[in-house]
Image (cartoon, rainbow, N blue to C red; front, side, top):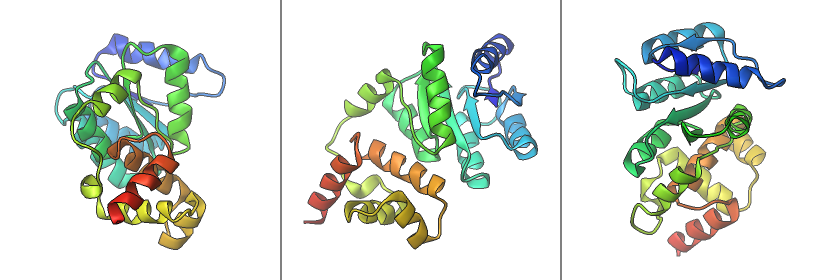
Length: 200
């Protein structure tokens, strides 16, 4: 499903994604309120959404969609890469954050990744987050993320974490992706190292 208040951009993104054999665009919306309603009706696997639209803020739409549909893949598509804006959307629950200059194959890859609970970020976004300031620490993690982070550091797989916490594997994958971004690391191994150092 594609969400953007500009008709031309929305239709362009929809046509772009529909050109891939393994992706079906089943719905569109022009604002956040409509997106929430259409997702509830059509139950897409992934939503690709603009962040600057009339009415609800992009992060608020992401937060509500995540709360109501925990396994939904959410990819933000924006013209802005400022770390504060990116962080707000990631904290709200987005799986990925792409800049609108992204090419079609990269957008399709992000949709496929989001469908299985994994994250994709444009290079500009990653650089923005890496440059934003202090060394990574665990203070920015939610209680659930902190719980999952320590299980991850102990070597448990996503499936094992999901079974222990009575969560879906997709939900755990989404939390792990958020943990990696918040800790400014790219791999589970790097995350485990940060977590173990913080525990010393």
